Image 1: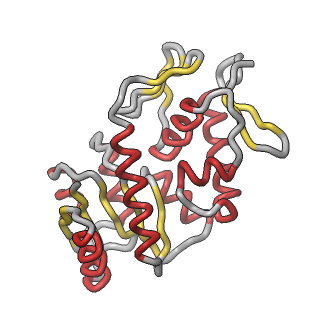
Image 2 (image 1 turned 90 degrees about the vertical axis):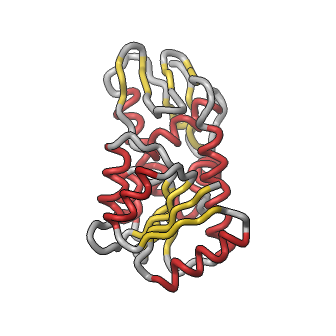
Length: 223
C-alpha cells in the first residue's frame, strides 16, 4: 500500500513516515502543496495524508484540484483547527476524514486503515436502492436519469445508507462508519450532512428516501 504525506513541518512528516513504514506501508513525502498535488496526481497512491496549512498551495486547494482532476484517492486532512466550520470546509473540499493536531499515532493508524479499507471496498459493482444508483469507482450518483453531484463525504454517507437501506442508523453508527470519530464530536456535523443529502437526493423528487426516526437516527426507505 502506497501513502503520500504532504506536510511542511519536517519533524511531523518524518514522525508519520517512520511510523507508517514500520507498518510496511510504502511512504512518499512532500513538503509543499504544489509538489504534493503533482505527486498525488502522478502517483498510484492508496491514501494521501494532507496538512491544511502548506506553502505554495494550501491543503484545501490541493484536495479541490485533486477532485476536479477526477482523482478519487482517499484524503486524510491534518489541521490545528477543529471548529465545526473548519471541519465542514475540509470535508466539503473533498477530503474523506479529518484529524486535529496534536494526535496520538494510534489514532492516525486507525484512520489510515479505515480509509484504505473503504477505498478498496469502493472498487466494486454499482450499488442501487429504489431509483438511486451509485458508481463506487467514479463516485457518480443518479436518481432515475438525473445525475446528482456530491462531495466525497456526501458520497460516503449516502453509500453507507444505501448499503444499509431500510435499517435505522443512529448518529453513533454513522460516526463510526463514515468518520471514525467519537459520536459526541460529530453530532452536529452528521445532521449538517444529512441535510445536504436531503436537499440533493430528495429535494426535487416527489418520493422522499431519507427519513428521520425521532430519537433514534435516520433511515433510507421509500415513501
